[in-house]
Length: 115
Length: 115
Image 1 (cartoon, each protein chain N blue to C red):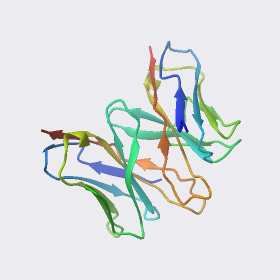
Image 2: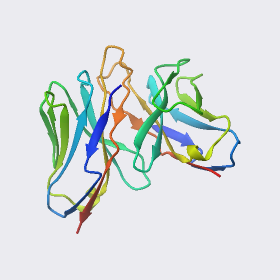
Image 3: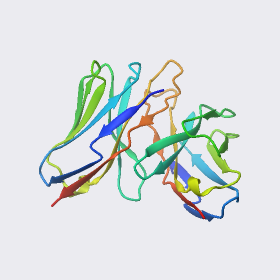
């Protein structure tokens, strides 16, 4: 199993450009999450999904949109990138219903720079 | 919503010494408390977790304690080794009852183990 994968690994955008980050998991997890990590700020939840076709806002959702059209994929979109969105983005997944575990498994991260 | 405070933000110890990282949480309904380790440039990975029906849990050199009354929990690492050097994050969530397993993270502790 590949676990949780993210593409791309690195990206540089100009202010105002758009892009989509892809997260994929092959563990049949129900829940998926997008976080951003900034120095001294820990991991902050952007959006999350509790199942295919569902999405919900997290702590810092402004400027981002998400979609979960397939259970294994969770997309994070930036419609008009701003320098404040320069960060490392992590995707995570959790909760296989038949197992009593809450563990969130993280992807390798995407380093995004907005100029 | 939940708020998790983590201290200290940096911790430097000599190899072989013990290290203790402390976290407090605000929501008395939180019942799941994981700890993640993040090495430089890598993804966060779960190292140990504790549920609210348990006061202490150990796994080799790592232990976590929970005081529900005071709403704080701590990570203890004994006989530290250079490979323990990393950023450690605590987190809290409400497990079950439609909680969606959202984690609220502390801001992290940079642990440096000096040889």
